[in-house]
Structure formats: C-alpha cells, structure tokens
Length: 210
Image (cartoon, rainbow, N blue to C red; front, side, top):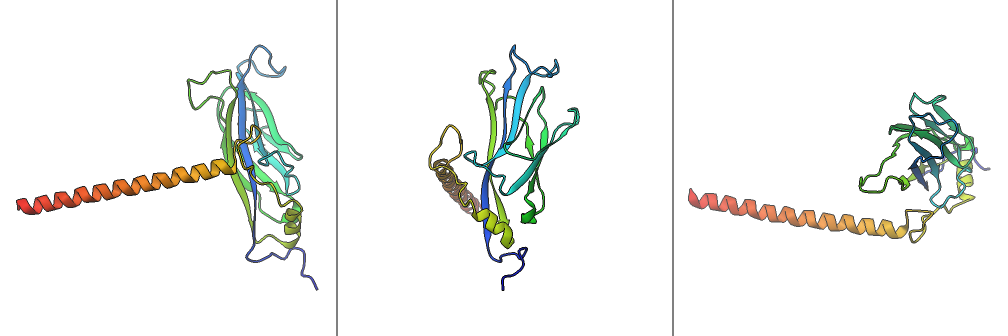
C-alpha cells in the first residue's frame, strides 16, 4: 500500500532555476498618469523561469514589499507573470517572498533585491534600459511525494545552451564563468608560491647575516 501523500522522499533533491531582478528606464515626456512629479524612472521587478516558462505549477504567489513611502507597499502577485511595474526616483531594497503551492508543504522563501535605477557604468547613456538580473536555483530537499509528482510534470526549466536575447544566462556563460574562476585560482596559487619563495629567501639571507 502506498504511503501518505505528504511522506517525504529521502535522499532526493529537485532544483528549479529562476531569474529575478528588475529593469528600469528613465521617463521621458510620456509619463504614467498617476506618477508623482518627483518620480524619474519607471521600473519592473520580476521573478520568472529562465526562458519565461510558466512556474505557477509550483509557485502559488510572489509578494513584493516596497519602500513604506509607496501606498499599499505590500504587493501580492497571485498569477503569472510574477512581476510588478512602478515608478520612483530612488533605489531601495525590495523584500521578495515566494509562496509555494499548498501541496509542497514548504516554508515561504524570503530574500531581498536591491532595486537598481542607475547603470553600474556611469558612462552608459541615461536613456538606455537598466537591467539588474540574477540567476539562482530553488532546491527542494526531500520533497513530499505529492509535490515531487507536481515537479516532475515539467522536468525542464533548463538554461539555454547559448545566450539569447530573452535570457541573459546560459550554459555557455556558466562554463565561461567556471573557466574564469579556475584561472583566478591558478593565478592566486602562483602568487602564493612566489611570495613563499621570497619569504624563504629573506629568511636565508637573514640567517647568513647573523
């Protein structure tokens, strides 16, 4: 006889990739009708699959907690796309809470995203769209049987092989990043050995002088 649906499956982990962050653009002459006069940018914060896949089969809702100066600062998005568009003039931390479907029996996942309105590179033209986007993976350790079946209905949600305009992250970029990290480790190890040799030579020189 099969066990209860909430029985957790031992030694199994299931991951689902997500992309989250915000885009922003300086407002021109055309402004949203309700935008306060002091607001300079229009921005959108979002959470989605790496290739805009529907992730509502395992995510019930996403809650964005904005700065307290916004009216109704807690915004609940209960259907895809899990995104919110607003206007503003300053950068601040947005609390993001992911609520999973009831079958998951998983705790709410909470994290912060720093709303970015201005480019990292200040030489970038101010009219260009600003993007602050991050890749992460939601890992479900020992999911219960019912939630595992739900996750397996769509086992994909994978990164594309190569970078595309719709997805700034890819397996290719992941491999390139790993290569850069390995090159950095090699260079650090090389410098450590060089400094070790210098220290050893200094100690020998000091011993001779004594």
